[in-house]
Amino acid sequence: MSFPGFYLSRVWMGSKVSTKLLPSTIRPLAAHVKFTENCQAKCVSCDYWKSRWQDHLDTDRAVDLLNQIGAVGIRTLRLTGGEPLLRKDLFQVLKRANTSRFKNVIIQTNGLLIKKLHKEINDSPIKKVCVSIDGLKATNDLIRGIKGYFDLGMEGIPLLRDKEVTIAVTLNRMSAAELGTLADVAHGVGAKVQYNILTRSLSFFKDGDIDSLWPERGDVVEITKFLRDVLKRPAYEVDYVTRHYNNENVDEPPCVLGYTQLFVMSNGDVLTGCYPLKPVGNVLQDKLETILASEAYSRQCVAMVRRECPGCTCGIETSLAMKHGASSAFFALSQLLPHPSHENEAVPTGVGQV
Image 1 (cartoon, rainbow, N blue to C red):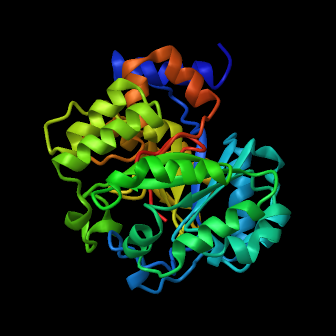
Image 2: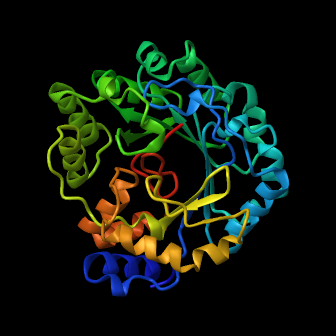
């Protein structure tokens, strides 16, 4: 079996049989990069917008980082934030970097600047655009804290050319009954739909009003129907989301995100595909290849498989796929199919922000 199939088979065996079988050399399939943490939306569930963040990766360092990511064999690049389109040098970075190494370049955006910057996006190596929209017009604008948010996003999407567009909806109480209609609206502008899951364990949600968005029993019924009948998600995945929102005990799968994706924050910190855990290195201090080969990176990835962590819903579909179906998981992950959350476009992430 060729890479990444062989690599993923080792991840599967290590998560199912023994951690001793996990790959000795870690080579994530996707990198999620934050060139900025700043965001102009004012989402009720998130507190990013309450702070003014300093971007530590200047243009030259940003270019070098993308080149390092490609050099270690990572073939999917996901630009996230904050709001990545707020970086005024973003397209300069993409032009200067050797992006030919990436099979997929994805941008996760709130969509507020797509209409303004659609020409730049169209001329860039970005292949996939993931727009965060959480409901129909009135509901979405209330959740996202910006009047006109929905219209700006939806008007910008048709201006994109030769891009795969996905609308990512965070499943919540306020828009539970609108999900089917939202999917129709998305399909009407040529966009696919994916989902994110609310969680209380992420730092950027700590001061957000998660309780006002958490689905009640009746809302969960609507969400379950949407996942099953509209998005056609696997039964085990639908069951997990249903139990999660009903606050029931769930059998958490071994978390394999450390082996399938990595995060680089705007201050240079490198995370093993997990926001709640501490950084294992910083690209302003060491080369990415050195960080990936470090004992700290390996030790934390193994700990995640063992669930020695605070727990979250990030990338849950990836870990669930590994647990419930080896062959289907290998195919989906090796092809980097874009299913949610957060999302995935690249390797799916179960919860995301933007």
